Length: 180
Picture 1: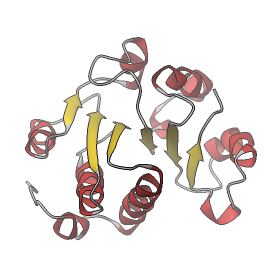
Picture 2: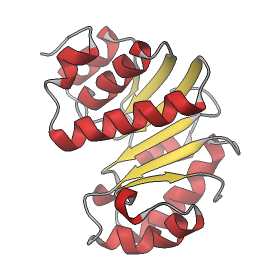
Picture 3: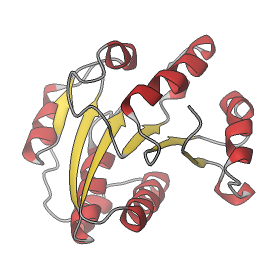
Picture 4: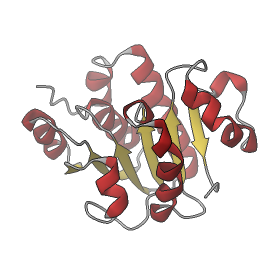
């Protein structure tokens, strides 16, 4: 079990793509946030990236309040979240959207969906993005990470990317704001 208390210790356990994701998110969040920030991590898997992000934000003198959800968490995942003061909900994304306030605040500053869409049938993508708006305000951001530009989700979400003028080089990490 990893239970490291510093970002450098946790960062060493991350894959390169996950480290880039965490560093990009920490930079983006720290540019937009003053002190306190609420984050929802949808599909947190083993909470490794969630813990790394929390520690990276704390290293930048931010106070993140993070809620992580994962439909089939292991006891180890729950224990890791608890050890790092991350609220955890054993919910599917469908359950979260039906009861968006079940595990956290009414509105989140950032919603993270890292590789989430690959576990969801394509017919539900639009509804998920639209319903996510119920737990966002005009300043909130929903961050969707993609495996590559060759995936079908990239094609689906291209109109959102163009709307926000996301450069081609950054299109595997999508910052979506105000599209609901």
